[in-house]
Length: 262
Image (cartoon, helix red, strand yellow):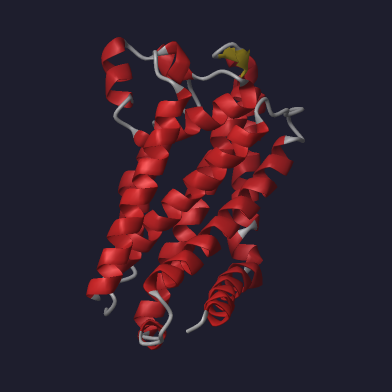
């Protein structure tokens, strides 16, 4: 395939992925908006008034970056894992893999689809948050980089999950038992500076903590990482490292034909 044909094929995969989640927008876009609105009403408005400030900011203001990042992570992951496993289950993925399209473009197409859904839902959540607080961004380049790179990372994670999954039950195990606990314990609703020193140390082993705090830093100009002696650049380096690692594993598995058949 020449370059033009490869780009056309990549665009077709991306269009298919975007069309898929936009076609069922009542299931993919509306529920996250309603859930986040409930978080704002319950935690931000009702409980937040009793809490006062968190990390030197109004509680609603502190919570907004975490909720945006939580939505981006969850939707980027779920879009890829459900879509790719659906292709495996229907065995239509085999027809794509025997084409002359390079595996890295196949992977890129699904990842970009996950990023698209993650960013769309993130934008919706941001718009909802403006009803509750006048949000401003302290560092736009950092904000854009963190949200896109995190979306790419979890899209790759969803692709890995789909490769190893053998049934529809398997694609819900990691989000339920690993991702959700790590997200909720990653400082979405609280500052880890409130924890005893032992649990602060344990929390530092949570990679999602660094992503949420890097995004919070880009919006508020402050985060828990600085207070604990960590640089924002260490968080960015970790994100890039995992993107390279997950990409390499995904491509290796595709080249080996692992996890393609149900």
